[in-house]
Amino acid sequence: MAPQDIHRTVGRRSFLALAGGTLIGTLAACSPQAKTAASAEPTGKLPSGAPPPGTKLSIAVRTTRLQLKPAGLEKDLSFEVSQWPNLNAGPDIIQGFRAHSIDLAVNAGIPPIQAHAIGVGAKIVAVQVRNHPSYVFATAPGSDITSVADFRGKKIGFSQGQAQGVVVLRALKQAGLANDDVELVALPSTQFLTALQSKQVDVAPLGEPTVTKYLAQYGKDGARGLKTDVVDLLTVLWAPNEVLNDPAKAAAVRGFIPLWARGLTWAWENSDEWIDTYYVKDQGVSVEDGKRIVASLHKPQFPTNWDKAIAWEQETADLMAEGGFVPKQDVAELFDRRFEGLAAEAVAAQYRETS
View 1 (cartoon, rainbow, N blue to C red):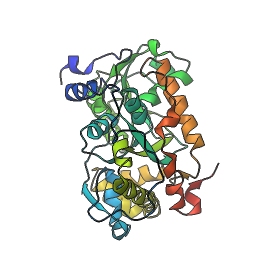
View 2 (view 1 turned 45 degrees about the horizontal axis):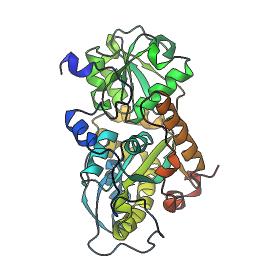
View 3 (view 1 turned 30 degrees about the horizontal axis):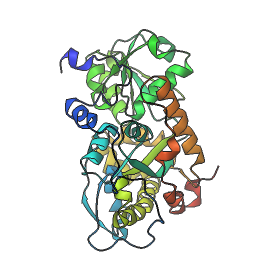
View 4 (view 1 turned 180 degrees about the horizontal axis):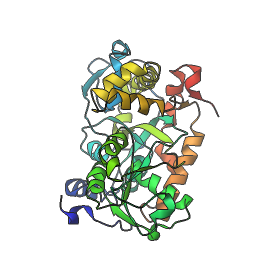
């Protein structure tokens, strides 16, 4: 990748401009337009029964795919999964929604804000909360950065449409730095490693298991991981409005939510099997690193009430609007509260957040 392809400073209103030319072209065409019946706001009572025979969903939730069989949940799948796209970056999911190739996906709280900003109708249908940091700021080999205060004047990998972007904005704000005090380099998070390795950015936020693999390779060359207390609170399941307006597919989404939640709790309770299934065989880290990663995690939590999640999402949207990345918006519109509490009801009390 040529330097000019990586080193792009983020500008105002650059909606999803960090996802590559094809995606930019696709999403540039999805400015707000007249709503069809399929894309209208979902309304009406949520279907309570099983979806009718032949109902299919395309689901971009890789962890659940890997959890269903060992957790004994496959038998409870009441519809057909037509495909499990191996995609998780927000811009890719939004493109999948627009192309009608993805019906349900898991992301952080940022992609729904970004989708709303460009007129892509979709709703959050389930929420998991993480009250602990999930990203580490990794520095380029040989960097002299030892704290967030040292970010001033540095090039920071910044993915506007993903959780990592808001982690950067929150960390800067917490350190008393303005966005203009640093150079935000527009990149999808999938290119953070390349940019760090080539020193085309000085620092970028990485999650597990990526940060472990990166530091194992470049720690000897002076790369380091800087932990902060910045929390990326939300993991959400979300779906396009057209899916939620289809009674059969809405029933399938309703049926999937408990399986998603139970799969996550199974992984927590069966960590050795999950380390082997996911971290070792799927993600390519060692057993030892897998154990260390899992030991740093916290048990999954599903809120019985979404008020806290909505407040956090609003604060995040406001932070993005202040930076000129999205227009002001009311994030309450992003949540389909017909599904509220379904994930929490599906798990044991120890996994429910009731505050």
